[in-house]
Image (cartoon, rainbow, N blue to C red; front, side):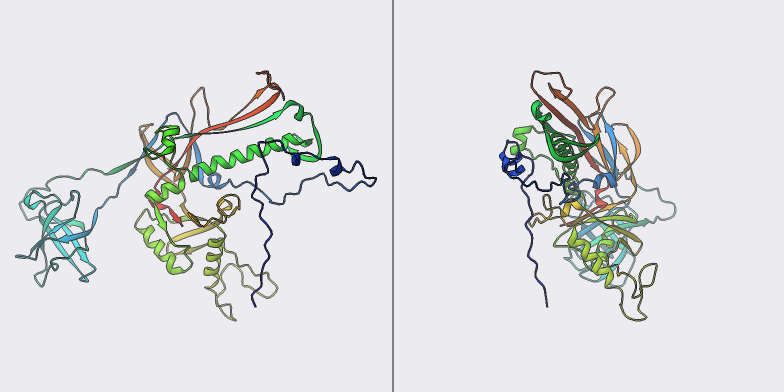
Length: 464
C-alpha cells in the first residue's frame, strides 16, 4: 500500500532584507527579563539548510584565465568531410547519369570525385563519379555517372538523399584535380559582464554584541554583522557562477538593450548548449536505448570518450534505476561492481558512473538544479542536467594570435598589469577601519568582470 507524506513547508523568503524590522532584534519578552526563570540559550546557530551555497560546478569543470579585452573571440575547426542531407533529384536517370540539387548554398563537389548516394525512402545506396559540378550555372546542382549498369539511380522525385565524397578516380594521361578546398573554421565570441554586490552596516551596529556565536575567519565572535557580511560574500560567490550558467546575450531592440546598451549580456552555459550543442527534450533518458541515442549523436560530433553528467534528483534516480535493473537480483545472477553482495552488506543502489560502448559517463548531483531557492521545483523551463565532456580542446585564440589548448569550459576575467577584475573587494566609509568618507558606516563592495567560454559546444548535452 502506498504511503503518504505530509510535507514540511520550504521557507523561500530571503533571510536578508533591506529594511530594519522588529524581527531583527530581541524584545524584553524574548530575553525574559521580566521572568524569574531563565531559559537555556543555545548560542550556536543550527544549520537547518546544510551548506546553503549552490556554487561549485565551475570550480570542478573549468579553469580561469585572464583577458584584457571587451570581446573574447576564438576559432574552432570545422569538419574535415562534408555530407549533404535532404538532397533531391532533378530528373530521371539518362544514359547512366543523374543530376541532384542540394537545395541551398554552394556544394563543394569537384569533377572526378567519387560519391556515395543513399536514400532511406528507396532503401538503396549507389556509388557514382561527379561528371558535372554546375549544369546550367546552378552551383547547388551536380551531375554524377553511376558505376552500376543495373537499375542505377533514384526515382524522380526523391528528396531524402544523403551524399558525401569518399575519393576520386581519373583516366590515364588526364590532368589533375580542378579546384581546391579551403579549411573551414567557425569563429565564436562572448563579452564579459560586470557583476557587483555590496554589504553595509552602521558604525553603531558594529559595536552591538549578540548572544549568538558566529563563526568567522577570525574565530568565533559575537558580532552579528560579521554573519551578514559572510552571507553577502557567499551569496555573491553563488551569483558569479549562476551568471556564467544562466545569463543570455542581449537581443537588439530589447528592453535590456535600451537600459544597458547593445554590448550588455553574455552567453551562459545553457544558452551556448541550446544554440550550438545538443538538446534532449521531454524529460530524462531512463533506458539504455535512450543512452544509445545519445551515443549515436556523440559519435557524430567529437566522440569525446569521457563525459560527466551533472543532474538533478529525478535524473540521478532514473540513472540509478536503469543501472540497478541490469542485475537479475536472483541467486546466481550477475553482480555488478567489485564485490559480490551478501545478506550482511548494506545494499548500495546509488551509482557513480557507467560505461556504454566506448563512452564513460560519470554522474554527479548538481545542487543548483535541486535547491528550492534556485532551479529546484521549477516546471516551466526546467533543466534536468547537462553532459559536459572532459579534457581540453585546441582552438585558435584570436587575441593571442596562435593555437592554444583550452578546457572545454573556462572563465575569462578582465585583467591587466594595473587592474585585476577577477574578484575585487574593498571597504569604504568611516567605520570598521575605513576612513575615506564622513559616513558613519562601513561598506564592503564586491565586483567582478567575467565571461564563460564554452568550447566545442557540439559535444555538450542539455536535458530539458
